[in-house]
Image (tube, rainbow, N blue to C red; front, side, top):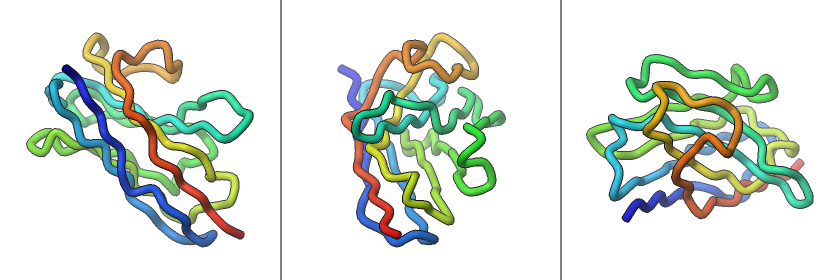
Length: 125
């Protein structure tokens, strides 16, 4: 049984930093690409960042480039999203997802196989 558990979300002031974690069980991180998505109230889930199975390729949505960094530690079976210079518009529930079928998975949520339950990030102005 695959389980992804996000943590690290909280209330933070604009300009602050957070690191989200995604702890996996029932799946081997080294065999999976990983993505982070977010969903604000009343909006569709949107792509934030992705990292390849081997950890050697990453890409980001334009609004977070230079501020967010995706990474994964295969030995710990855990993925991360380091978020710096947070803005109020970053407020959302953040979800991690994994996919074993592609080396580097795309931006559509439908491409990912397994999802976590989400962690809330709230950025105050």
